Image (cartoon, rainbow, N blue to C red; front, top):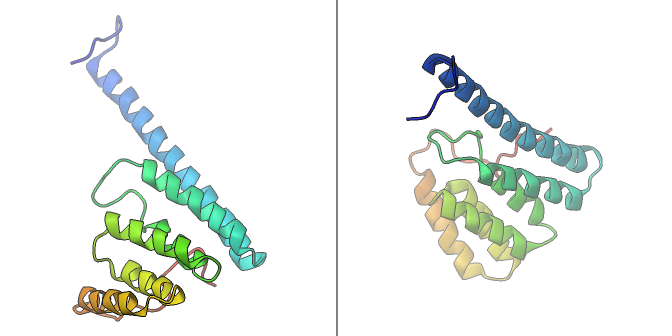
Length: 157
């Protein structure tokens, strides 16, 4: 229960609370969208992977702040795109991004494949093969085999 101000109805208090929650969600989404747009501009127009990775790190942080919800508030995990962007320049950071994504989304085929690529780049082929085997299991009943690299809608043409 909560106390109501003089003259305030429970319905009005509930409506105000709903508006505050909705405003919070819009603010969270706006933060992610702004970071995603910055990443797309940097990656697709300027060819700046470092700036794209920085923007995606902001998107990841914004999504991480969102409360747990099923389905998730944001439609895909931007950490996968961060791992994808980092794979050419920093395989260790790429692996860290995919590994963390696997913590949040266990046995996710996209992240298993991305982690395998990062492990290959680090010269850890046996571990990479293990991740590829797990990815094959994750994708075994999919209608369409996953494309490579992971889908990053804001980075695709």
